[in-house]
Image 1 (tube, helix red, strand yellow):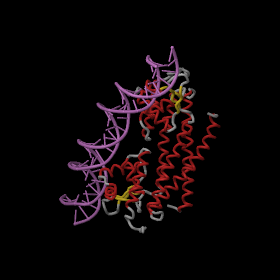
Image 2: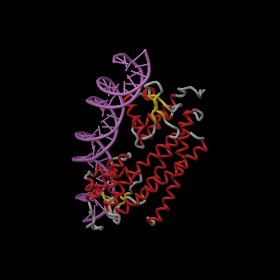
Image 3: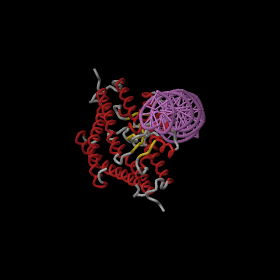
Image 4: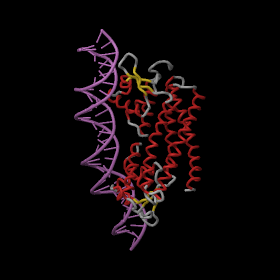
Length: 165
Length: 165
DNA sequence: CCTTAACTTCACAAATTTGTGAAACTAGCG
DNA sequence: CGCTAGTTTCACAAATTTGTGAAGTTAAGG
């Protein structure tokens, strides 16, 4: 019934997955078009698509693709590749992508920590509010360290289960 | 200079912290008013404020407070308490709050995992796309387990450092 | 160099989100 | 039972965000 190597194997199923996963990413705060592009790449066999292919599949303009891709690249959620000997570009997700994305949260955490430190300073480390904020800061510092170790464990776990990517 | 137990100790510093921390929460996807209310509570000495106090400090209407607080309560980021013998309500952050909030991410992860499983099914576990999604699923499952253990470690770490909350 | 395919930027219209004032509840208190 | 302080809901105006078509930019290929 299903032809495993057929390119447009089950457009229905692909589309359903793309739209529902994208919806959840949106709920988590991602821009709509970026979420749809990311989900589409995730659900493609090659893991890479050109701007034209994305526009076609998602029924959106080149401008929308461009905006979405810029955002995703900034977040390290896709990488761009120049198709050699052509002005066409392809956008790719790595199977390793989540590793990248989560590791990237680190930078965000650092900024939060900075703001919290300022807060402790401004409010005084001995005031009740200052203490509460200091505890929040401690939590984030703890998380930061743990996240790094966790990602290291994932790397190993992953290699055991899927082999090197 | 600074009077540690003065209620409005340094309104300047408080406001600065509230607004910059809120801005970062917004950047991370939280609604603006909810972020401001949360930051204001975090920066208050008692860790709790009434609707009127919040409205006053943040210069927003009762309606805005109501909406923000509803959202925060749903996310388990504040709890509501009835001031005994009054129809006035207070909204409170616990110092433990982040533990709660992160634990709550668990529910979100579960929903993502469900969608990913559907995707693997729909695309076929042997197709390249199916395999990529299966790996994403494995990553989230791994994260879920790790998060739980991490929060347990935090609980212990925290008690050592700050004593039971 | 000129042509042209591919991507990006820009101004704008449409859609969505946000916060408000005012009306509608709720529940203490007399 | 009202009365009224406190909160929530609702309709709407304002602000913001989103996606588009069209113009602008870049660089491959002749």
